[in-house]
Every structure is written in structure tokens, then in C-alpha cells.
Length: 112
Length: 112
Image 1 (cartoon, rainbow over the protein chains, first blue to last red):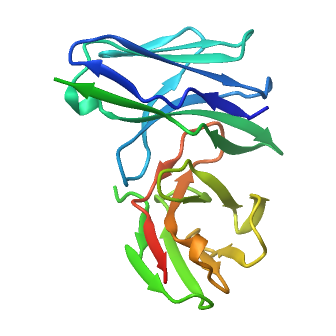
Image 2 (cartoon, chains in turn blue, brown; image 1 turned 90 degrees about the vertical axis):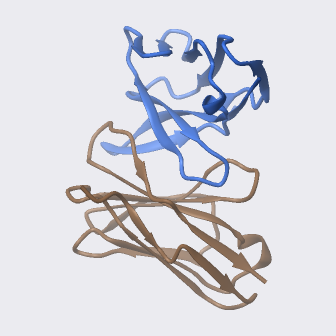
């Protein structure tokens, strides 16, 4: 089983739509969780951290279910500029260090 | 505050040659991570350095090596280059602890 699994997509949605991405992780000892965004041929950029209570940042909402080892990202009112690959990221506790494992990403295409 | 800086931006080498890639982390970050991203694929973890020591290594052959200097900057060396080493090489840095990484804009290595 992969450490972090995501549906690769692509998700093609019209502008204004709501879209949700899911991710599962295998390491039950993971302590921190993130969503990153990567534009084509660019570096990944931190979109948001994911907290147990769930958190929201504008049009973006992230949820964490530790019991099911499941993370989600909801994007409301999609914009053309949201088109990118979204990476689910989980940290693995390795000797007290911080090694993040990146999913292979879910591609989103927002269309007119 | 300066972000993570990588040099060079682009590098073209011939098969069999050696490549050296450089990375300067964000001031105060002691951990440096290297990833390889081939075109159209996900991030593959290469190396993790913290406080000058190699903490973890991905599933890559020994011809991929690196080091971290006392000022926390880092160097990735790839010996005996092969065509399939052509990829975007990303460096990231973080504080110690369960924090997200900040990536540099990468070095695009082309082996011909």
C-alpha cells in the first residue's frame, strides 16, 4: 500500500463549481498534514495545513479523519486560476525528525 | 525574507558527466530536502539533511549523493549521468518539527 494515495484525476469542472479531493494515508503515527498546490513545471507551494478540527481558508476547506486515516480538500466557487495539481502531504515521524511524504497529486482543470 | 534559492536554474549535461546542484535554505531552517520530479510524474524523495548530517535517503543509486554545509546550504551531486536523470530537482527547507516545507524553484537538469 502506498504511504499516501490520491485519485490522479483529472477533475474537469466548470467555473463556479464545488469540487472535493480525497486522500488516504497509511502511517497512523503521522502528526501533521498539508495540502500543496503545484502549477505546471513549477515548485509545489503550501496551500494549507490540515487540523483535526477541520479548517477553512476562504474558498478552501480541509478535513482530517484520523480514525479512517483520510484527508479531504473542498474547493468552493472554483476559479480558472485554481487549475493545478493538488498534493496531499503527510509527515512521518522518523527519529523525531520531519520527513514529509507527498502523494502523486490530483489534477484539477477549471473550465469556462 | 529570502526564500529557498537554487542554482543553476537550468543545467545541460552529457551522459556520463557529473552534475552539481546547489541550494540555500530559508534563514533559520536547518533541514534541507531534495526531490526529483521527472516530467509528468510525482515527487520522488532523494535526500534529507539536518544539522549537517544525512538523516534519510530515498530509493536512488549511490551515484546520487550530497552534503550539507555548516551554514545549512546543501549540494546535490549526480555522477555518471544517465538520460533518465533528466528531471526537475527540487530543494526544500523547513524548521525542525512538524512543519511544512518551503520549496525552491528548482534546477531543471537535461541529460543529452
